Image (cartoon, rainbow, N blue to C red; front, side, top):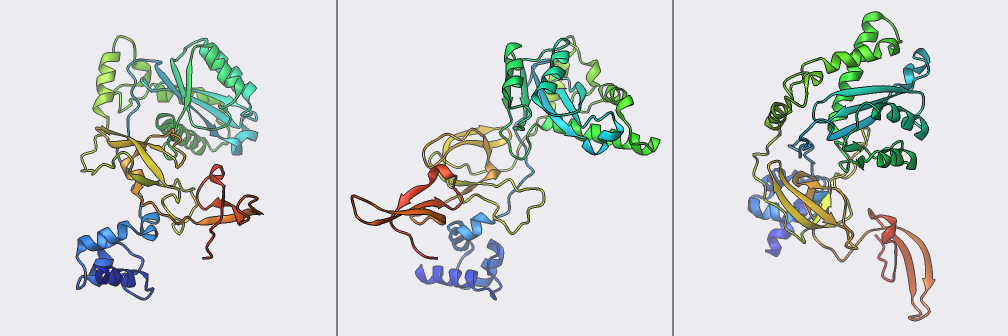
Length: 356
């Protein structure tokens, strides 16, 4: 077995080899005289170099937002229109609000995104309609004491999205629709001013047929809500692919959420290793709860495709040595280090530091 492993390793790490630093198939084609496909797969699964840079599947069925009635849950977001503000009464942002059940939307122009202006905008709307829950992304404009107090005073459960990729899918989809309609309006009328007709554009959206609910948002009422619910549930995605689930206590890495301009040369999965805490099977595939090295629960839910199996190691990379000391008890030199890929809360004193 050592001979086979050695042959696979030699082929993989030799830069001018046809199987070097590639995927399973290419490496197997280079060593098929010495190793089977399964042996190549098993060897690669234990190599950080392969796992960290493995391709991440980004498009897959995700858990739907489960709502059963009008105003059960709203999603909110700020849309940046600052580049057109000088033509639109200095309105830099559009506060977009959408009811997740009916898909009915409101849009409120704002000059700033400070807490006072956001609170005043919501005060007006909440006199007309009031949801049970409001969801936003983790933008600071909503995570402040004034906004939270307003929602709490109105008996609204406010929470944020924990998905780094798709934050608040329904309102984000509305953002794209609204932005497209505004840009088409500007192009047709050869102008940069849209503010005068903004509410007409929003009304047009609310009066337009929506594929998910199979009617326009403005047509949704308490009387036809049962049919709307059936229409929504028919659109819920189902994952038909076979998945071999991770098990509780398995060690995994998390897919990194790359910036829009970040290149593929950076790793696709985290250096930090987590532990599977809970496993649940859903129509959209397996989902997981994780905990970190200290046993602290991670708030997000993770999909199967966002995780990669990791092997525990006794060697961890050091990002930097912060300071040194002589331990008064052992009289040995110690290093206070930041571990590569781990948050600062894991900084610790160690004695054994190996050069790379």
